[in-house]
Each structure stands twice: as C-alpha cells, then as structure tokens.
Image 1: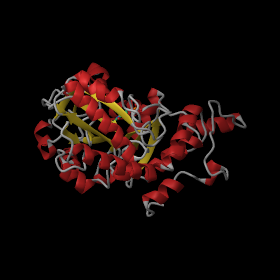
Image 2: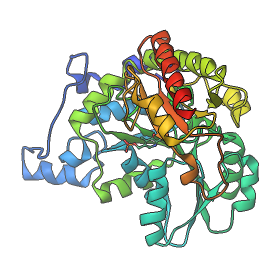
Image 3: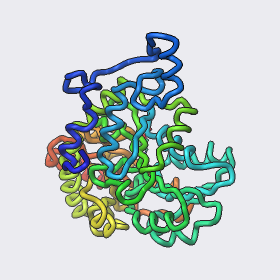
Image 4: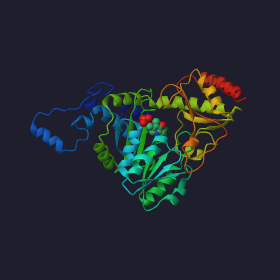
Length: 394
Ligand SMILES: *Cc1c(COP(=O)(O)O)cnc(C)c1O
C-alpha cells in the first residue's frame, strides 16, 4: 500500500486481519511463553525464521509487529522496524548494530545529550572514538572522514538549538565512502521528513514523543533501509531489546492521530514563534521555519512542515529572571520530554553540552513544546511571563 498518501497509510498500516482478528485496533497480545502442539512443531518453529511468527515473547506478538509495520510503511524505501523500551534504547541499539572496536563515529554537536552520553560512555569503553562536528558543516563533513569512519549520526533539527542539517549533502559524502548514516528523526517524524527516502540508512524515533502523543509511555523505534535490517535485528536480539505489547498498543493508538496532531502542533508553534520574534524581551527565536534559523534553506527544501518544539533566547537577564517567566506560566507544565498534547516550558543551557563549536547566546534560553491548547491563550500566558521576566531583569 505504498502509493497512498500518509494520512491514509497512518490509518490503515499494520492492521492485518490476522493481527486484528476483526477488531479495529489490534488488541494487546501479551506473551512470554508460546505453546506448541508437539515437540516436532516446537523444533520446526525454533529452526525457522521467526519474523511475524509467534515464537517467544521477546520476539514480539502481533501488537508490536503491527506498530512496527505501520512505521515501516511511513518510510518509503524501508525494510523493517524494531521497537525499543525507550528512544535512548533505540539510539544505543542502532549505534551498536553498526559500530565495532576501532571505528570512528561522527556526531553533531547539537545531538540530544543522552546520545552524547552513550557515545562518551559505552561506545568509548568498547573502543569506538566519537568526533563531534558543527551541525551546519554540510558537505564539509568529508574533511572529518577517515579510513576508520564507520558511521555518521545526524539529528535535524538539533536538540535545543534547532540547526537544520544539509542531510542530502552528508548522505552523498557517506555513500561515496561506504559510511553508514543514522538520523534521530524524532522532531519531524516520517510524516514531515521521510528519512529513508533521502538515503538515510537508519531512521530513529523516540516514539515517547509524537507517536505516543499523550506523555504516558516510553517507547522507541529504529526503521532500517532496504538491506540494512539484519545487523539491527541481530544486535537487538542479542541485547534482548523489545518494546512491550502494552506500550506498543498505546503507541499504535497514538500513531493513528499523529498526522492531525502534528498539523495543529506545527501551526500553533509557528504562530507563537512569530509572535515571540516581535518582542523586545526576546533576542532570538530558534525555529526551523524562520529564515534566521541556521539551515532554514534545507528545512524549506527537505521538510514538509514543522512540528511543535522550538526554543527562544531571552534578551539578557539571569537564570532567576528566566525562572520568574517560567514559574508563573498557567498553561505550560515544567518538565522534560515533549510531543504530548500539553504545552511545556523548559529552561535549557545548550552551551553546556557543546564541544565542537562554542554556542553563545544573548541571554538564557527556554525551550517550548506547544501543545493542543488554543494558541492565543498560550500567547497571553507568555505575554504575562515576559512581563515578569522584564521586571525581574530590571
Ligand atoms: C526524548 C528524545 C530521545 C530519547 O527518547 P526517550 O524515549 O526519552 O528515551 C531521543 N532523541 C530525541 C531528539 C529526543 O527528544
């Protein structure tokens, strides 16, 4: 069903009759033990390819296969998808699938901080060297590639600061040298950026965010391009990684409405970003759809739209003045993660994580996750917040 539009696919994909048993939503198939009719059947199943066959709970049930198949359908050119108990587990498994001791890995300086943590932690321990690069490097990444470079990690837009990467240019460099590419596609999802079609080998999602969409489940996924699935499957089975049936069911339930949610998140976020941009208390808004965002031209070229997460830089002021803004907000929760239906405001300090290139700002930074509330109510809330900030700043 690869010819249908995404909104149609997202409704239908993964709902095979043998998995749904005639129910609209594939039910939760919970299992550890699968029972066999005979010793002969048990032996036959164990020896065979267990893809989409009940074998043992860790290999999944139709509940997980259904969500995985739906995510694969949304990435034209993909071979298959595996689920993980969190986005971080998905990132870690994908990297372990492609890296060996002695290899070099390139990671953007704007990567999600726990991704850096994995590279600087376990990967370093097993002898993989990570080199951080300026996310705006584009084709210039060729200069960082050596005979040992095995993989290029990508995250576009970048966490906290939202630089958009020139993905096709980097993919071209990688392909010419036989280097694997992995993209953390959590911000855009395959709906706003079909990554495998751009030539990316592994498209990674923290499903915890927009796929689940309701801030109540931890879940991750990795979708592999044609011919790239086997190493991912092998390492994930070795590590015993699996997303649970209950979490997959909630993920699938969220996925069915993701297209309409993303549209609303994106529209409200852009309206609020444009409003913040006019405010004297705000030095800069970091949003890929605004022309001043580094890599905006790649956003326009490669993405189908923006989602609901962006940051802004305050004009001067202290940490305390930033807290005065955030603490008094009525409609924004204060918390980690994003992608749910509710708005969030988070104080962030991108400069603390950078090692490849210094990141400087005119003042403290706030990251906003724009939820499904009315955008004008959110603007009124932020307006009062900026007044508190201005007063605290003095
Ligand atoms: C949240 C997030 C992750 C990790 O997902 P978890 O499910 O929280 O482990 C990975 N990448 C990005 C860009 C994220 O925002």
